[in-house]
Length: 429
Ligand SMILES: NC(=O)c1ccc[n+]([C@@H]2O[C@H](COP(=O)([O-])OP(=O)(O)OC[C@H]3O[C@@H](n4cnc5c(N)ncnc54)[C@H](O)[C@@H]3O)[C@@H](O)[C@H]2O)c1
Image 1: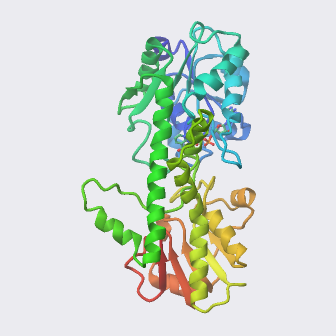
Image 2: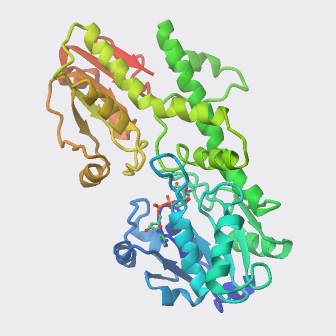
């Protein structure tokens, strides 16, 4: 398989060309022949025109690539090595939604041939590849797992908006269903990963490794968020405490904040779901999720308290929220927790304007039902810097003073203006 991919006798296909799938497909396409498959025909048309629908890659990223983009199942038949990189979201009740990964498995199952390889990159709970996906591949293809086709799992570690940690520079974890396939899969990834490939001992180990990377971050951030709630009651600033504590060599450098996006705030639910199925109620992980999911509302309540403490009526008070995306310097608004702050403020009858230089106003309206305004309309009773976009990092105090009423409150969720605000009522997590 490896040699045949290298000399282009066989093709590699990537199923799902989003944040994860497109970059990996393009990297492979510099070395071997690639088919990029996505069910979204509009996105496929954009990629044919060298446009990354996820806004992460420049057109030059498509240069020199041997890749055919398609939404047509028949064209997928030409491939022999399939990489699945479709979303693995949660539903409204925080339960894993396997629909995309099972649907992609049905797609691959329909074109699978003896000798083919299928590698899953979507983040899943340990056991999902073998217990949920492989049966679908077998059913649709009529082929036998291990005898007729091989399967592996290799999680993705890229971080949206991060230009330093890329596919090439991040060590990749890979695995296969037996020693031979594990080695072939690792060698295929070594074609594009300069940092090297860690061979995990099994598919489940590789699945678990990915899920705990994000679970560990989530729980650690939750601890700092809880500390921030405690320190607020003590009247001390969390960032000042962290700055002091971080001078110890083994103190972990986590910051308080909203935990949004489609990885850190989502993946722990995959793990707790599987633990539950096995009869174990994960306590620490679910507590962390509770704390982190409560932070958007907490920030709003603190803001309301500050407005009231200033003697201002809360009914009809006006607040400006700066930043709507799930993190800084990206346009991705999916699973952004800023909406929790907006909704909580509105529940107190506060009128909220939201601005964001990166977010698409139509997407925000469709996803959350609120408007992004093009310009702030001063004056506000509170200004909340919710996302530390580059554009918001170095604004002078006078900028905020001009936005606020005399009794206005400045809320600096990420603590970026700590020490820089002298005359305004200031609060941060
Ligand atoms: N975004 C990240 O930074 C990141 C990092 C590490 C891991 N992951 C994981 O990688 C996986 C993919 O995430 P993403 O952020 O790239 O998702 P995404 O939403 O950006 O892209 C998914 C793509 O898959 C397509 N798609 C959906 N269902 C499909 C199907 N049945 N067949 C073919 N195409 C289909 C969509 O049209 C879309 O283009 C998820 O499991 C995610 O948890 C994401």
